[in-house]
Figure 1 (tube, rainbow, N blue to C red):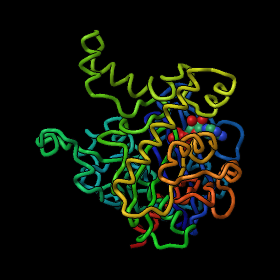
Figure 2 (cartoon, rainbow, N blue to C red):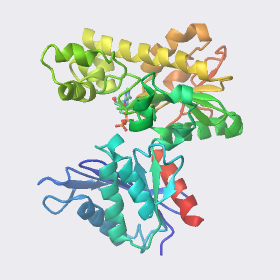
Figure 3 (cartoon, rainbow, N blue to C red):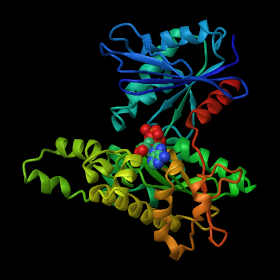
Length: 394
Ligand code: ADP
């Protein structure tokens, strides 16, 4: 047996694989995409040519091909010690990561109605790895689990109570793996215990969410029943008036078309009419493109409103933390967001901001800022590897 840990993140037509050694250092990563298609292809970090997969390769064939290469190149010597899987929805059943057995699989299936595009395909990855390594412990790490500490006043919608009691309609929250990593990292950087660290964590990638963390625990978050609620995202609208469904149905747009529009054609993409890529939008805005400028304005203003709203859940605040592709890399978004929050005493240092938190304390805040502002790279794969290692060792 090898001492390494494999981390698997399966999406609808792709699967990402990462290999960590026993000291939780990442040794390799790979991506297979366009699965179940004629042009399925894979890439391994450090190997420039794409790897041919069998025509129409499925998740299992892709994982098998990637593991064969990891083994042939000596990265993996025999079976791994543990396998960790990202699973999107754990409903109210999973408050933390879980060792996978028949009971876990049936519980994941039970809550799949809450994430029909994600949970079933996460289970495909679990099955595939079980076929390849039947005796290796597998662990499920849920995007929702970290938010199970939300108090009821934060997770309930003001709907008739049977919506919650019969159908589970409540705010679950997502990106929990990333937000929990943020508070661990912020505590380390601030020299505090996680249990006494309180932050507002903004994860800004293609999907965006913000979480209030009081003394290490999630107490409010912007994503809800699904990952559609809250901030403006790459192609998702975030908050809209639910009256929109009725209004548009009166204009001949079906509920499923509105749903598709809110998920795929809205957010930065919808506002700009060009792209969901923040880097491109910043370049276009610089050249005078008005819709691109507006997309950035709406994105930053909504984010600033949410930072303000999150303070209602906190009795103290140690730092506002930015992460995700936009949060880590866009000095402009950080600056334009914090500019709205002078009343809270938040202030960016323009020079530090340009360093994107690459210096040892990760600060981008001005010394006069009432609260620290940090930029911290997220590492969800590492958290999954840590959890897999911890649970497999028990
Ligand atoms: P995902 O949620 O798919 O993992 P990422 O966390 O990689 O996405 O974030 C993707 C977003 O990060 C894109 O909008 C991209 O334009 C943005 N981004 C990456 N680098 C920069 C940059 N230097 N400046 C502005 N935005 C950036």
